Image (cartoon, rainbow, N blue to C red; front, top):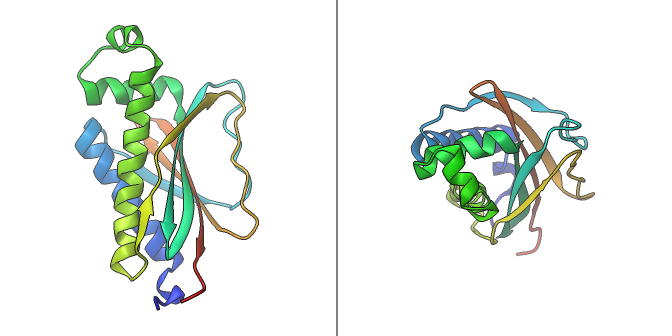
Length: 171
C-alpha cells in the first residue's frame, strides 16, 4: 500500500509547478512563473472578466480534480501560439479550437502531475477534459478533499490552478 505521508504539500506543489511550466514552454512557447499558493478557500474569478476553465480529473490510489483557469482572451493567445494562427483565424474556427487547446493544455499538465503521483506509489488515470466559460465563475471545494490553489503569471496575466484530491485509504 502506498504511504499517504509521501504526498507532501511540497511534492504536490513542486510537481504541479514543474508540469505546468513544461507544458507552457513546450506547447505555447510561453514562460509561466509560479507566484503563490493561495489559501484553500473558494477562489472566484475576477468579476466581469470572461474566463475559460479547463478541468481534468484523476482516479486511482488518489482521486482528484484539477481546474486550470485563465482569462478567455489570454486563452486565445495561448491557442494562437500553439496552433500557429492569428486571432482572426482562431475566431473563424469557432469555439471548438479554443476549447480543444485549453482541454489539451489542462490534460497535459495534469498528466505530468499524475506521473509524479505514480512515481511515489499512487498510480491513477485521467478523465476526459471539460471546458467551462463565463464571468464570475468559482470552484467549490469538495468537503473531504485536500485543496491546493496556485497562482501563476504568464506574460503579466494571472493563471490559477485549483487542485482538490483525496487519497484512497483502503488497500
